Amino acid sequence: KKANGNYTVTLIEGDGIGVEISQSVKDIFAAAKAPIDFEPVDVTPLLIDGKTTLPQEAVDSVNRNLVALKGPLATPVGKGHTSMNLTLRRTFNLFANVRPCKSVVGYDTPYKNVDTVLIRENTEGEYSGIEHTIVPGVVQSIKLITQPASERVIRYAFEYAKSINKPHVRVVHKASIMKLSDGLFVSTAREVAKEYPDVKLDFELLDNTCLRLTADPDDYKNVVMVMPNLYGDILSDLSSGLIGGLGLTPSGNMGNKVSIFEAVHGSAPDIAGKGLANPTALLLSSCMMLRHMSLNTEADKIEKAVLDTIASGPENRTKDLYGSSSTQHFTEQIISRL
Ligand code: NAD
Image (cartoon, rainbow, N blue to C red; front, top):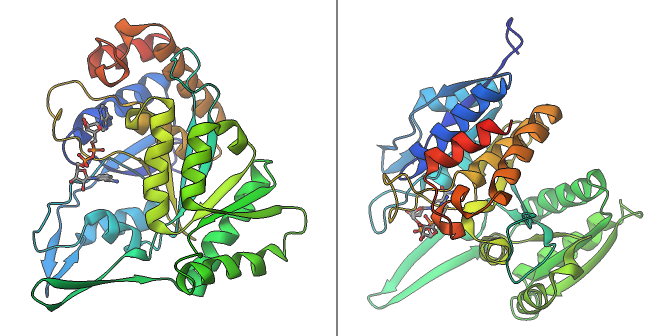
């Protein structure tokens, strides 16, 4: 916190639509007089000794401010370096990715009253990046699951479940097939659960979760799901689809020290630079960030203005929500409702 009462937050604007949706957040925060000073940093990757590395200034900024808001970063396919998203998660040890998904009142989809939250293990699993070619035409990719990484994300899920008053944790897994790796995730959950007698624990196979979540999301209202990395990546996009798509879903990457909040979606190269992007997902991520900083009043005010604008009709909604509004018009409408 600074002498003027404001907090400094690192801002990574990101690629593609990142610039447009970050501008929307900055304009709305200024209009709402949220006590945040954004410190923009450049995270263009450096390749040092064959390793993708973050610019030191960006690392120092995040370590100093402890909280960051991040737009999407594009990962070029087949180029030399590791995904910057993975690099950020590893650099700051952001082990839990919290992804809530809630229907927007006034924006109808075939699913009513969706209210789910899943926590994705953020550091290992299929995303460990351990791949090699055995012989041309045969590659091997290793899924890494460790007890410490499983334990910390599962413990986070139990604590989170208590904090949001949904004392029920559901582990989503595929231990029926991946008996050792997912088996370790499952057995770790049973161990951690012993410390939380007041929180219910159950287990569900991933395929069954997909079936039941799309058949009746109501059954998932009062549980906190926790799962290995890849399953969380996929299941969170599925959940987004239930409420109107990727333009709407926020997330928080949580570590022991640093937290980075970002939209679930990517850089949307197909619509970048056209003024069509929906900034809602990044705005709701920024509201998660404000609540994490105990700035609940500001979070409630901004969130209400965003949701009210979406509910106000198709002329004020972006194209992904079957509306005709530009990013800028949508932003202005939110500001008029603050
Ligand atoms: P994407 O999420 O960028 O886009 C998928 C579809 O959803 C596109 O049609 C896009 O136009 C639409 N969409 C996404 N966000 C939107 C928004 N806010 N408003 C309106 N429409 C929106 O996924 P992709 O095309 O598979 O990936 C593009 C790039 O983003 C890739 O380089 C990928 O690696 C990267 N990516 C980054 C992150 C991240 O930074 N956390 C997450 C996912 C993908």
